[in-house]
Amino acid sequence: MTSAVFDGLSGSFRSSASIIASTGFLFMSFALVNLAPVDVEQIVEVQALVYPAEFCESDDVFRKKLALSDAYGRAPIAFGHRDQEFGLLVSYAIAHPWHDAAPPPLHAADWELPAVCNVLHVHDIAVAPTFRGQKLASDLMNRLSEEAQQAGWQKLTLVAVRDSWPLWERFGFRTISSHQYANEPGFWMSRELSPGSR
Image 1 (spheres, rainbow, N blue to C red):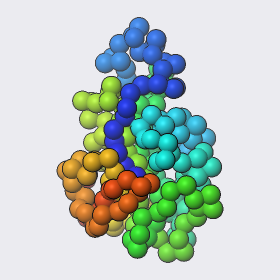
Image 2 (image 1 turned 180 degrees about the vertical axis):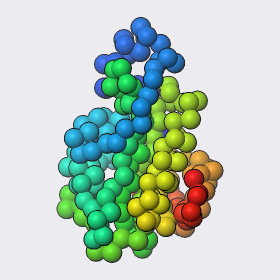
Image 3 (image 1 turned 30 degrees about the horizontal axis):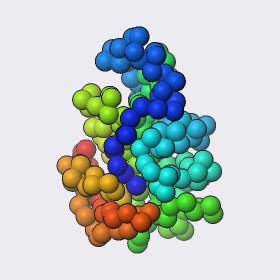
Image 4 (image 1 turned 90 degrees about the horizontal axis):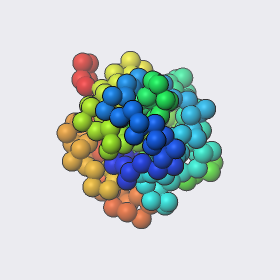
């Protein structure tokens, strides 16, 4: 699911609020770093800031989504912007192999990849609003597209929720069909990848 909308800073961000206030977040320096199952705790904390409870998946489901490769050895893609001085994660992108028959389910305790995966599904891309205006979302989308092509993927899919579909259209996604996601209307979308596309 992709929303790209944060409700504010709390949880792990709240613990860093005094740091941000004393230094000024506009002067924070970010590095785009790879994320792995060991980063799930931070990812889940960010997820809780973005989505209502019915959207939030467990630590175990996230670890599976970050750990499983498809039959061709193509691994999930996950990275985010982390402040280089304080270690504050302010954005993330997560995508994993899937198929184009239907979007992946939420909250599947026995979550596993399909036998045949022919698309890279963008589970989520998000940037905290406090740090918008620095082109972090564009960095995430460009990096994801580049890595997807390097891994041999020809198509991206995602489920747009919370009225975020205009954003994804600007990134080149087109609607496949409407899709009910956690009892909320959304859109299943796709984007064809071509050499040099970003």
